[in-house]
Structures are given as C-alpha cells and as structure tokens.
Length: 181
Image (tube, rainbow, N blue to C red):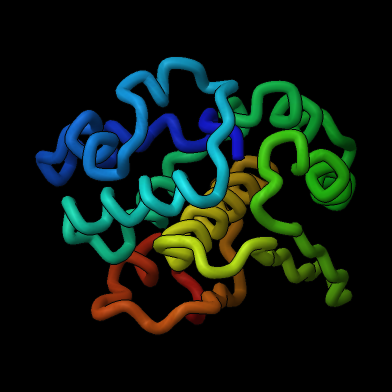
C-alpha cells in the first residue's frame, strides 16, 4: 500500500500522547518510513505498524480515526481524477479501475443496488496479517471520507458493515457514520 493515505498517523498517535518513532521501533520499521508519501509498505510490516499503534494507544478504533482524516488529495492523481468525474458513479468506477496504483492489499468491490444505492466493499488479499481489523477500519474510513467529498457534506451511508468482531465500544463508529452498524 502507498503510505500517502496514512500520512495522518503521527497526528492520530499524538492524540494519545504516543510518538511515531516509538511505534516504528516497536513495529521494527525504519525511522524514516513516512519521509516519502509515495513509499510503499507490504502487508506484513503494515500489520505490525497497526498492531504497535493499537497496543501503544490502547485505541480499538485507531484505524477508523486514521481513515477519517483521509482526503482525496492523499490519492494525488487518482484523487484529481475522481474529483473531476462527471458523476459519483463514474468516480467509483474509476476508483475500482485505478485503486491498484495505491493499494494492492485488497480487492475493491462495487455492486449496484438500484435506486442510487451501491455497496462498496474492500476484501483483503492476504489473510493472517497482524491487526486486520485496523486495516479494514482504515479502508472503511477512507471510503467514507472519499464518498463524503464526492457527494457533499450532507451524504451519509445507510449502513456500514465490518468483518471483524464488535469492538468494546462503538460510540466513535456511531458518531462518525450516523448510520446503522
């Protein structure tokens, strides 16, 4: 995955008085990992990064906090392409066609449900990585922010589903999505 989508991690960690170097050391990753937003990270080290971040912050929804800070600018050229599509449907099709340039950890899914409704999914290609729930929460947070930017601030999902166990608290999830979980 391209690290540009995760550039908000230091800011998110600071909310919990945790420094990025501390997380990187625990995860066994280079101190300059975030120096270049175009740098890529494989599933195994990304899982270690999410695991260390979650352990040090004690936050079950850390991935969602991170995804909720996403902006189309984080996708650079793809973000510009999506923003300039004629319709949201065209933008989602472009996302499906070009997401592999940013993320090869999962396969995106888009199903037309009729009546201007779609199901947008994200299915990891590798199983057994550390902190897969955080990867999923980051992806769902990014999808939420992406759709909010494309559809406008009044857009909200009808339902949001996760493929991991229910966290101890879903208050942040409810607050962010304002939808059925």
